Image (cartoon, rainbow, N blue to C red; front, side, top):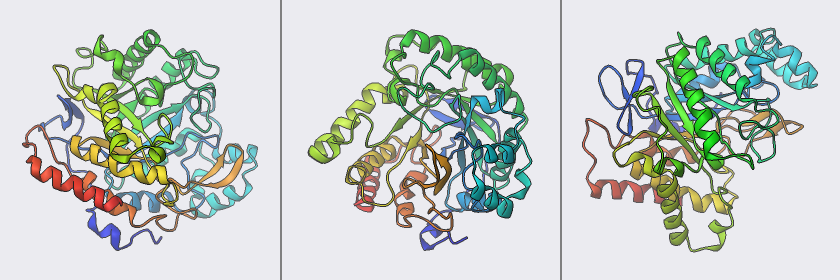
Length: 412
């Protein structure tokens, strides 16, 4: 596999070196034993679409994929899953699912590269992928992406908010419980999210408080060691309700709550990145983030903020993305936030009815044999560094400023 290029030599092999479980201290995720800060530097690897299998196993052995994630400097993988994988389809084998979807070529590829998963159930194949990831010393964040396996996310896909067509809150709670129990003895599964990108016309703060409290409590009940990731409203862009009313779990889940947010150039419309002065729109972006999300890291109730999705088109042809990236990366560096890049995959088995579709946001190319954009990895160098921490003074403003300028230069 030709993923390793000279660009990758700037990264250190991402072997996990902290004790577990993890905890929180103020706005940081920390080693529970020593109190030393741990910074999540992750990549997303989807397994929530209709085939219910981590993408790319038709292209390369899972151990090869996991190894190269580690060699790219990531210390964790955000692995996505669908509720019904565990509550309704858990006994269905990979080969049965792929045959039902007429994924003949993908079956041939899996037979060649990962034959051991073909006759496993979807959930056992999911566990096999987790085993491959953790064998290279990387942590796993389990993300409940959707209820019905499918491409995400739109306002009307039936997966957006509690009570939507596919989003039965009771079944969702059951799914969280099943997954929490299943991996409570898998030490490197260090965090579970409640739900990806709550959204749609049904969303409201009262129901958000109700079900978030129930979901977080259930995860903690069955698996008290994992961190619990809480997503906001409006595609994980808005936590403003917490300015006036706390979540109410700060004592029950003491030192286990982490808030997660997302951001792309198209969040709120990408035209602004093409039509407005970049200095102005970057200023407006930072102000909006601080107003609706960033405030979580300040004040008397500070908590960790984990950007579990951000990314750009790595073909370099999307000017809105090209303008957005240096601004947003400068913000991530200044705040020294935990992060997870969207995404790893170069292709999908099946996306919105089309087979073997390309993912232009993917680090890997369509064949999973090389990097889609080798130069992009160098732009992540600053974000891989831990610039602040509970037992480490904040870098001098001058130094941070120089590093942020460096990010901007790298991304131009």
